[in-house]
Length: 228
Image (cartoon, rainbow, N blue to C red; front, side, top):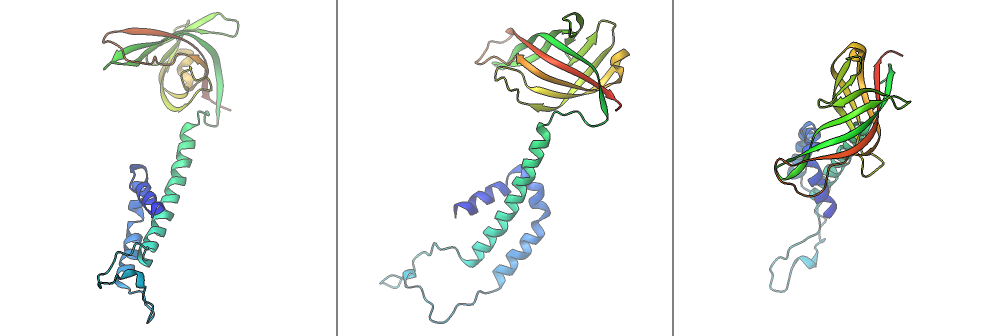
């Protein structure tokens, strides 16, 4: 009985509702067939445990053939739904850059994640970091938007489309962002990848209104444009 209840719970979840909607006609057809088609009972096959001495009928907690059939239908639909959600979740967690994009620039972000107090909890306000090349020279900055701007004035603004938990538990997540605007050298950027993060996670505990905190972090930012 427990597996029947669990299958029903999964099927009624919001994530699985479209699948259940698609299969509702088939499910109702099976249900009506089971309700209106009697199950033959062999003569003399009476279960004495269903009666007591004074002639009153006791409850029979054994699943009927109808309930078993309903349970099997629910279980199959639940398994299909959970498999679909698992695939969708895996795809969602990927921060790989789509095919046919090439690396334009890779830089190190070094600075702070700035948090403000919202409703008694810490919430990210904006990044505030320098962009460094492989030699450690400052080539630009990273600030609210999120926006990346080079010293020559070129810039790109991104929107997160995928997130992955960082291996470092104290670090902000790894991200894949797509461009929502840009100019100059960064005008051709279509995707930004944030990896190799260290530090920057939100603070634990409550806070008082208008409080601000800066949490140091570093990250690798890779900028991709269209092309092989």
